[in-house]
Image (cartoon, rainbow, N blue to C red; front, side, top):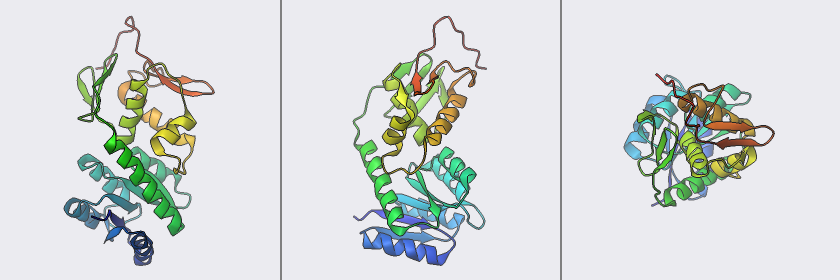
Length: 238
């Protein structure tokens, strides 16, 4: 079965441009022109990847991404307007896998699609592992569940992968460049600010005091590492 790509944009000429180039590469292409249509097709057709414009009539692309992330882990590439940095950051926070800025090169978009699909294939092929525990944190790679003091923590797919990497190698220092390449791939066109943003969001969810973290520590001039909190430090989470 060919890989199915859902293209969501309210500009027909962009849909046709993307459709043509994806078809030339052997993909099967579905299309939707608004947010409600995107959700309906994502649920009924179960595509392998979604190319999703942010500026959509009615339900916008960010809300579509937020909704889908509660239902599925399908890879999502956001289409954003030039200069729309805030939208790109929010999209990544909501769990988008990558973004492309308009106007874009069709060849670049196809390369991004292939890169995201390769990363997802590697994740799926990774063997299941035993649950990881550091301090009060517990991460189960099989069920994709994270708990803190036995209470569930809601993480995006990228936050989960970031935390899993840290928990597999406690006390190891990871550079921002390594994290960007390992979790987003060599074909990702973002910057190390993407890593900082995800670490910040992760801290908000697992730390008592995000500005004074006990788990994810900043190593000045290098990157980040995870350490287990000392036994003497009491947790005050309500």
